Image (cartoon, rainbow, N blue to C red; front, side, top):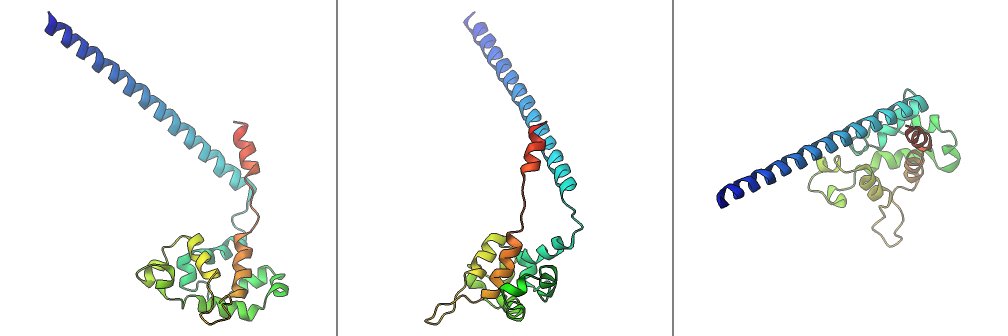
Length: 171
């Protein structure tokens, strides 16, 4: 009799655990469905708000560490053409010289084992280090002062997620 009760108790516990797992699976499926719906709405909102064919998005590709390290593009001329105000803020030739020489920093400066690893850094890490690089002599000046303005401009292009948030909240 005692053994039979023990078996029934184990069966009841197993059934309870099975139901709990099933309920958890349902909750996970619902969560995934909600996440998927969020991303669909987010993408639709971004596509309706931005023209991704705008040439300014092509310019932002230079922010990617692998492109910057390989000097793609070879010159910042396109940036100065797209944003003529930059001519008033910095010297285009000096900025171009800064651009062409920034990839001469040693990979050890970035805290990695090889030049190839530099390309795999996050944009935040890469540009944070490059833009804060200073001369080794006693004046301790920034190495790339004109490049700072150009990259800062691209990093600060106004973006807002207010429309996205409003659109998502309505759903």
